[in-house]
Image (cartoon, rainbow over all chains, first blue to last red; front, side):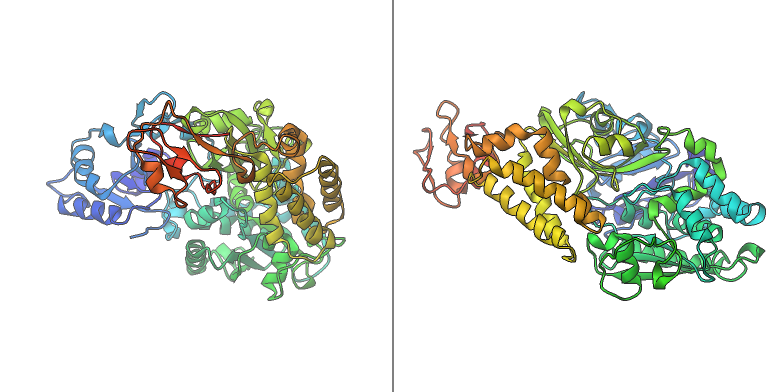
Length: 59
Length: 544
């Protein structure tokens, strides 16, 4: 899928961790994105970030 | 490389991530739009840092058809699959094509089964369609049994809807209304992913009665069984779906005529089904234009062994061994020398460095004594003993043989005994002739693909590495320094600093020496475990 397609139906920024083999990595990333208010478009944020683990997660 | 992280739309690629890297990654890349160089991929030969996925040879040398959605589409969401064009091919087939036209299109594409045998998919479908019988079945072979291979499992986990779409199209073409997906219990991620996909497809009217209002009805059941290598053989798999022991049967009557419960059945590998929607969407000519004339499309290889970039790599058929190992795979680690490559899984043949420029397609690989198989690849460097490696894979095949055929059950066992003798320095030159004769018999007489290919590791190594066998037998030497009975560890007194690490780590207390003085190994006590060799920081422990 091209980047433009990602923009069409997903968030502005798609963070895709193909192999989640580091316990705690993806939860830490999700928490940091949430803490900074990046997960949804809003007045204060120009970005909508989606954290995505397509091949399953270990944590 | 892993855990890796891809950040779209720019394609920034980070490797070897840890939770502690997260704050910097978010601050620099997501907020400020800057690349964190220390987290980027380092090219193994030039040591250059590469920031973008598209610039990494492992990825940009690939042509991803089978893996087109992997890592991009949420496997748990049929909506996402539809959003990237999923089920358009099914709509086209059910709305505008007859079953015969579908079969013709697949035949024109030149698609061959990706499960190992490489039979024409279109001809298989045609045979199942023409077979007599009201009730017909289609099946997905998800029983991936090769050690170190995970193409099918990864695909079922990452893109299950594409497999289902291919199955539905295939069912329409052959006239089946019931399908089965067979997966080993142990592949829990694949089972979970396929189960969810089937449930969602039903909810969306993509499985069940009157699919997309076409009048065509079809449903799929998930079947699970114990994992085994021979269980992936078509008749063995059908036995497993029927609830019987997973053993092959003679195929004088093809499964397309009498397969599951004696009905015409069409079984394809998960990768084969996955390619079908793309062929329908983009046309047979597009697919036939990729690869070689007789081996069209791409192949997913599972790269393993002594290669820098391990993992799944999808390249056009006809790609050379050199391109796969050195361009995509990044070459052999630690600047060691490439020695051989085994292609096709545990029963694939070994090819030497002389054949690095050989194109990998079904015919060329078979002529060279190897095979495409499901695409399992193991790279060997100059420190790997081919006799010992052949013995290892023959041991695996002996373990996995169902034992039904005497030739396979006993033949593989005898081959293993001889190979073991040779690696222990007890072989005789006449053993080589016996190995060749046994290998030919096992190939000729065995019933299924396991037996027919089981002697490939030994026959191919005898063909290309006979000198190494002779060195084991005549000189009682293992040139690669692997076979324990034929090697001796020693300490180079000019290099040894007397740090004492090897002495501390030796489990048999076979090493002695004063601090800051060269140490020595007692060959009588040494069990040749190699720990001293591995721990020495001064390259002072050698093998002879």
